[in-house]
Image (cartoon, rainbow, N blue to C red; front, side, top):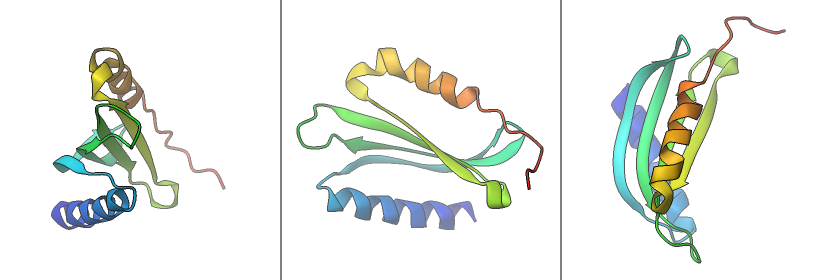
Length: 104
């Protein structure tokens, strides 16, 4: 299940990056994790910078799986500024709180 999801996602992101002359530098893959009491899929990869930018980017996709309330949070930063932005991105991810209520 995770392998199929990861393979499809990787192909999709590779196609998107190619359309913008970008490159995936490293694919870290997808793993399941608990996030705010919900099942989440965490995908990590590194990509090249867009034209006109320096450095490369660390990207994390956090997919919260909750039926029609599912969503994806994308957190990324330029690795030239890892010391500043990695702790901030980690804090954003760890601060996710998912309510157990359904709004109709």
